[in-house]
Picture 1 (spheres, rainbow, N blue to C red):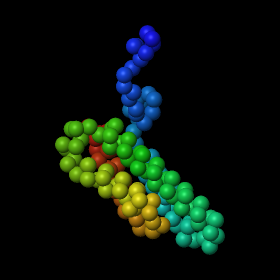
Picture 2: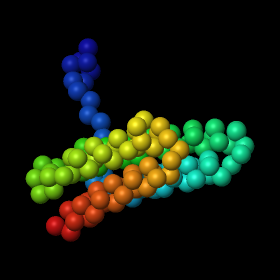
Picture 3: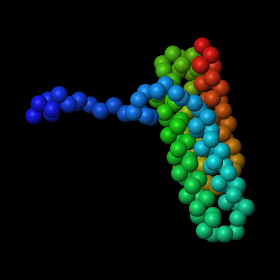
Length: 133
């Protein structure tokens, strides 16, 4: 009974168990590069099993892109960043949508992956500017 009284009432979650402070948009970019590679290999193959595996991996990697972007968006960037870079929320929204069902998860078009990579690059540029300050 005592342990229930002393137990935390709320559990907090972070991208890791120990808030390490290590953030990098390169994680999202690496997964997005993998998404594009899966799309390219999908179109280069005539093997239906290989194509099915390419789609499965592409969709898993698209989810990882969204995860890494969300971690940056929700854990790294703070109010002063959003004040200084008013387009930041829009960039993250567009990037995560490009990694979702209406984007790379829902197509095998490498041009969509290029759009996603471009959004990640825009976010990365802002990220690195904030690291210089």
